[in-house]
Image (tube, rainbow, N blue to C red; front, side):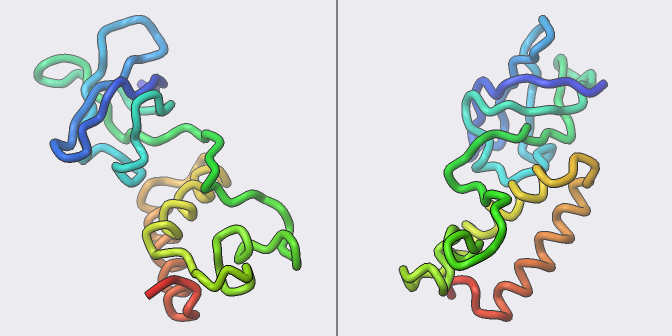
Length: 145
């Protein structure tokens, strides 16, 4: 059953935490192996959607993904141009700052854009597209070495 809730806590090192479901009930166990996004993105208060399952010790979440949230690092849908190009916002070569984003920064922003663009993409599809675009960005020199 698809459910929504907020992350109560998530220990990135240990790889687990708990979600408070929006529907009344007990807290739901979450494990890093069930996260669709990068684990560092799951912070206390993050809104998530997940499949609710019966685990050995109580309710367990699977296929956990972040619900679209405003973020200062999110790429906007503004058209590219001299003042609104993606490179300007991402710190790329045309930004005048001279610093390209790191591969990790680019990966995180791209993941958010893919999640926001089409709610029907699967985790495997997102990963496939993300790695293809990341390879292109590296080949073009758009990322910091």
